[in-house]
Length: 467
Ligand code: ADP
Ligand code: MG
Image 1 (cartoon, rainbow, N blue to C red):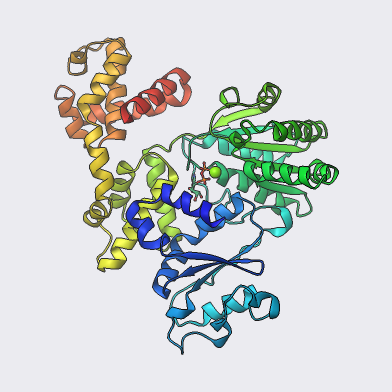
Image 2 (image 1 turned 90 degrees about the vertical axis):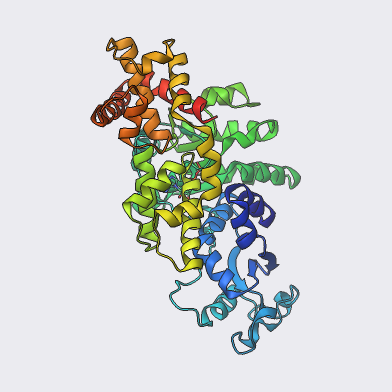
């Protein structure tokens, strides 16, 4: 579990963040708890407020049933700060005196330390088997164009399990909110029907359950477990690739649940037809219900997410800072969270207020990389190529639709993908007035809501320009 956490964090955080906060942590098993040991209380406090919920989420993803504890390395403690109960944290003491090392005891001992303004360390034990984590809700899921369909479908399914769409298949890139939505469905149904039999699990966990059932010759029990569910939430199903035995088992579970009108919700990194090394029968079945995408959040949504996260952390994030960050960080919600954490860390270290200047400093290395890549020239050229018009048409006064529309698309991409202001964009597009640019952006924004082709064009162009 911890090795997996480290891998995830290494991928998700900047090297600096990772080295400062995550690398110094050690993990050890204590009874049925996993203790994450910080070298000092400062690191512990920081990890708790910034990363612990992520660690919990990873635990949930893996359906780890262990209780998670975050503690300070007792050898680093001054003798007065640490109660004697924590003096013998060797792994064997768990057996000799379980009470001494019970999760409650160690959490309490952490809590006693005089650190001001802290919420209690939350111990996570996913309720027997459900795998749900109650911090992922519809209420704290920010909506925008990128995810409104997926969210609406998820709400429908949570309200009418087995009746609306079955299965619901949600796909999209890393860090875009798939797991959050999946969990929200479970939490919502649980709220409405506390007795419903719900199970969230990561596909990897399902694979290992199959292996275990196989080794223990306990397939009947295994089947029983899944076939009696009201709601099965299965995350990152691309992990079934090449696991033929798992796929076979899942095929039966799937059929039996659907037949009984029990709800299945699946997430994946691609849409059903594209999943590699997956049984054709499963691929077909995955698209029986409804398939919806979560896309990278657009600018306004990124701003909204930053403000919401800041609000939750009780941090005052000025609109211009939110905008600045949202313009820099474009690919995923998780990255946005990381950027915000970095800014907060920087503010804490330096004691300065959070403003654009500080944000720029905190995100310097990210900005350097991206700033170089995307220019207005590049956008104009790419869009012109795509629509097979001349680059010079981007600056020309021509108003025929076949050039005016691509020009508008290019302007709105310039707004989304670069840090240039409306007047600067107008300037780059043949000296147009900034209101023309604003109008173009609004118009494209509106059009793409209903025009699937345009939406797809813009999606493709965005990818090409970013790469
Ligand atoms: P995925 O499963 O698609 O990789 P996650 O669901 O794990 O992504 O989301 C990554 C992080 O971003 C999580 O902390 C999640 O709570 C947060 N997040 C994602 N989408 C949203 C959203 N629309 N509003 C608020 N938070 C979000
Ligand atoms: Mg996920």
